[in-house]
Image 1: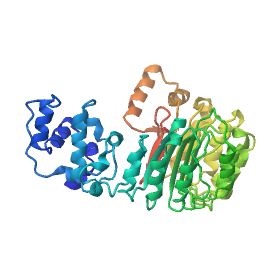
Image 2: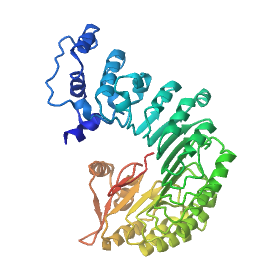
Image 3: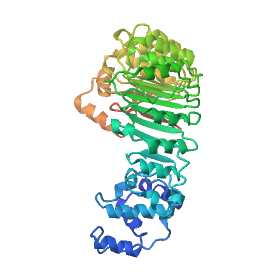
Image 4: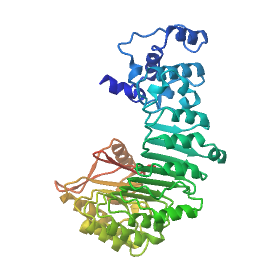
Length: 445
């Protein structure tokens, strides 16, 4: 148990000052004297008597910088030297360690040899070059290209990427194209299973990721898509993709991605899309995603409600429906009637991000009461939940506040009378979080 708890010390040790004191207690007497002489630590500091050499258990250092006083360069350096010398297998560095020549510290060839995750947050290409001589096991890499000059200084990062055995998780924030990095990542085309792009134009979308399981694209909405991105989307064959999340990507491109997948998708989340192809998108869901569990749908164009009925009938594993755009006036109440009539037994989560108070009062009550015969608890999420409570009960502001306090405590509310009343759990605000075993559906990104 001790090695597990101390593998990620910042996560499991809650008193950060105590953690810092324990770390400093591992330093040599000469180093502690040096820190006292430079007024970096108190002259009254006393080394703790330690049961174990806890530093040897440290693996994940990605947040450890938060306990070190900022501006204490000497203290930082001595602690990082301690980590490199004593840690047997570091899995993740923190961003400030990249400002020090840790690859030169004694023990680096051992402690860094099993590095698993790296955020490339420095322009010092020699750092990455030296790291490439030690590390071969990096599987998760974060890349940032905010400045044009950063794109021209990538020789070390390029070498580091190429030297790894198999990179699986790639996170890229870009504003400029970098063909050399794209080519380096293509070496890992068969091993990449997770790709996240926070992108201006989409240059880093690689079309031939044969084992990709998650694709998340968060695009800056005020920039035009480049033709390379569109071409890569049209040619992409992500046959093993399971999770697709898109922001500011047209539904036409989303449809093309979905059609080129072998029915493995179980989650689709879409935000801020051009909705001209909403009907075709809903059609694509039930034609190409028989195993879908969590899906964004659109009811803001003619014909979309009829296609939703096909989704409910043909997608019998469906657990959650997410509606982020406006619902057409003529579809609001028919949408609830359709759920009463055709919702599969597995469905129990609804997220409606807009205009909830415009549902008909009687239809809304009928919908909740109809859920009384279902085994699953209904999770019903709306941004304006107080509007719903006023609609159903005509509650006063005082009662609304009481209800709000109850929601904040995570309680549910029963709608209807008697034992067969429908049970519904509400949450205030736009954040949606639901857990199904190890699966998480969250709308906060």
